Structures are given as structure tokens and as C-alpha cells.
Amino acid sequence: MFDLPHGLPRTKDLRESLRLDTQKVAVGHNGEKLHGIGRAKLFALNDLDAVKLFGTTFAPELNSLKNAAPTVESSPIKTTEEFGPFPSQLLFQEDYAEVNRTIVGMLALKWLVSGDYDAFTGQQFPAAKLRRESFDQLRELFMSGLETEDDVYALLVATVVNDLGKDPEMPEKAAQFLQEYPPNPNHDMVVYIAAKHGMLPLINESEGTASHRRLMQGLLFGSEVNIAQLAQAESAPGTLKHVKEIMAGQEHAFTLKFMELILDVAGADGHHDARCAKPMIEPVFQGYMVARQALMNIVQEKCSARGGYDQVLSHRGRLLATDGFTVLSVQDPYERALLRLMTMGRTTTKEQASWFDQAFRSLAYKVRRALSDGLNVDGIDDGVAIVPYYMPALFSETLKTTSKSSKDVKVAALASLMRFLARIYAGTIPVPGARGEVIECSVAFAQSAVKSQDFKNNPTILDDLEIPDASRYVPVAKVDRDYSVNEKRA
Image (tube, rainbow, N blue to C red; front, side):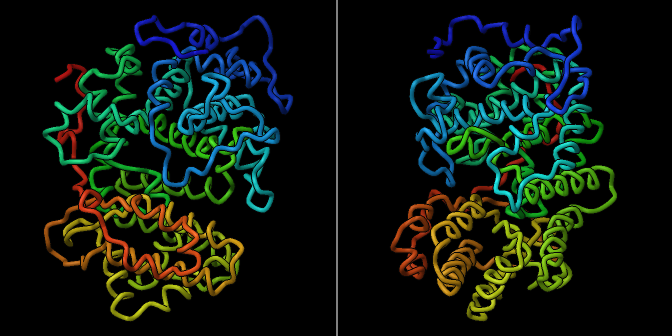
């Protein structure tokens, strides 16, 4: 329906819908009068009309997302009457996971701005549902960060552009520009490089404007610092080394990037349930707010990169201690390693924490020591830190696979994953004074094994899984040493 050729001019309907309706008083879902951008016509549309509007506005980009490979955690798309038609079905009459995730992220913006708490949280699990006061806090962050219609449009552009690097054609098209960077760059870096060289028409449209500079600064920041990886302790402190250089004096650009991340997370389950922002539950919201504050503290020189990173780990420790688990300290290497594992595993309860604790303790001493050493390298003046890309997703899949199994089975499966992670760290240890470096190793190759019934029956099969050469140790490149956004394309 909306499969438009790339050569057609982009519709201006979305721009029109962002103009403020000054002829009448706009009222949100909680009965309050809406001010500022809340008065834009977009936020008064029903969800179906909003989906169609997004589809016509961003047709070329959504076409590219049709080609994007689903993420590690993507489960089969549900098409039952209970879940109703998905955005990609409405737009293309077929299911495309990344299209659904992106569109639901955009709908989440509409729900937030219009104050529709029920739509935003509708199908979330009651025990962890986003609290009303947290929704209001998140909404206030968006309302204060979106001062004009250009800000709203820039946020929607950032949201749809975010995952274009997952389109396998994108690295091929940008191949000539990628030669100066390490092989197999992640999708965030691919998108930034493509935008930097004028390959993204949606970005080019705003060239020469403040919105363009903020978009480019956000893409640069995303290519260097993955906030989601920080919130899940998947990254290493070394990835935060240049935060201040990139974002100092760029508060508006940082806010835009953070809002984009929130929408990305809110829509992350859109391929499975498009009726609400299902993943943005209370513990997830709190985790991302802590990560945001940690980054701001680094920029303001209130703490070091390591100190900011440990704020995320300490938050997880406090969350679990509140539920009755033992208090863990980031000052103790073993306890800090366990906190990283629990944060990657997204643990929120004493029971879940006990599974990780028992699995960690069950490891042979040499394996536990190797894992602890690898988890404690910063990548800043202490040697090589490895980022196990997609490791939180493997923990998540393992807990799903064993959800109906006994505690012993869960612990055995988690212990197997920890042994696997120890192999990924490949003997790296903190060496004070050594040249720091951060490299990445994708563990996505293990997803089929972790999802299999064989793994559930015998978790030790992971011990024999070979690490492909293509997944090994890609340096996390610094794409712009001067961290300036140049309007002129190379």
C-alpha cells in the first residue's frame, strides 16, 4: 500500500500535522490542557491514522527496514486476533519485525505526548508495570526536550533512521567509505558514516539547520557510546572515555538521542505485541534514567568513566537489595563481576539474583577467576576490554527457554552461559598502566544453540560451540577524533 518508489517526493502531511492547532484547546487523556507541541494535530490522531501517516512519510526508510535482519531476541510475530494487525501488515500486507518495532516506537511518542498512560502501558506485566509517576516523569522529559515542531520531526527522523544500518544493503552501499574503519562495523557506526557522506536523503533534507547538526551529533554519539549497552552493563567503561568530548555543550543533541533511545526500547517488542510500549516497564525505565544521569555526571566531570559505569551497577545492587538479596559492592572484583552478570541478565528480584549467584559460584575456580578478570577490565589504561555484543539477549533467551524448568536447570543453563562468556573474554585481565582498548565480539552466533531444546536438555553443549572468526574481536573505532560535526560531506 505504501511501498513507494524512492524517486517520489516525500509527503508533507506529517509536517502539516505537527503544526500547532491554535483554534481550539487541546486536551490530553487525563483531562489536562495540552500546551506547546502537545497541541499538534498528530497527537490527536487515532493510532491507525498515525500508522498510515508514518507509512507515507517514511516510505523509503521503512522499505529499507523490511530487509533488516531481526535482532537476537526477536521471537516469531504473533498474528492472532488477540494481537490484531501489526503496523507492517497495515502498510505492506506482510510482517516485518523491524518495521513493526520502529512504528510502535513512534506510536509511543504519540502516547507519551498526549498523556495516554493506558495505551503506553496497556499490556505490560502488572508486577513490573511502569508506575504512573514514572510515566509522568518520562513525559515531562519529552515535553521539555521537544520545544518546537522541528524538534518533534527530528526525533521521528532519528527514530526511523536508527536501525537502517541493519539493512544488509547499507554496508554494501557505504563500502567505499567504510574502508578506513575496522571491518564489520556495528549498525550504529554504519548509519553515522552513511549520513556523514550524504547517503541518507532523510538526513540530507535538513542540512544546514540546527536540527541537522543535532541529528548528526546524535548519530556520532550513538556510533561511539551505546546507552543501551551501558544500561545493561554490556559495554565497558572504556566506551565512555570520550563522552565529555562528544557531548559537552550539546545538551539538546544529547536529549534528542536519549529520547530516541527511549522510543527504540518502547517499540522493541512491537514485532510481538504492537498494542503498547511493552518493554518500558518500571525497572527498565529506572535503569535507563540511571544511565542517563551517569552520562551527565561524566560530561559535567562529577565522576570518571569508571565511576559513571559503576553507578549503573550500584543501582542494580540497590534494586536487588531492596528485594532482600545480599548487598554487593563494586569495590570487590568478584561482587562487581556478579553485578555485571546480573545487570546483563536484567535481574529484578531476589529469586532471579539467587540463580545468577549460584551459577557464578558453581563455576570452577579458574573459570570464575577468568570471567571475573574479563568483566573487570575497563579498557582505559588497563589493557583490552571486550564488549560481548548481544550477551544480554542470550541471557534473556536462556531464561525464556528454561522458564518452566526447575531451579537446578535454570542454574545449570546460566552456568553454561557464564563458561561461554569466559571463553569470549579469552584470558583478558586488568593490567594497570597498559594501553587501553575496547574491542567487540558479537555472540549472536550462539542464539540458535541457546534457543534449542538440546540446550535445555543439556546446557553443556555450549561448551563445545566454536567461536567463528567473523565474530571475533572487532575494535570499537573512533570515527571522528575531533568530535566535530562537519556540514560538508567528505
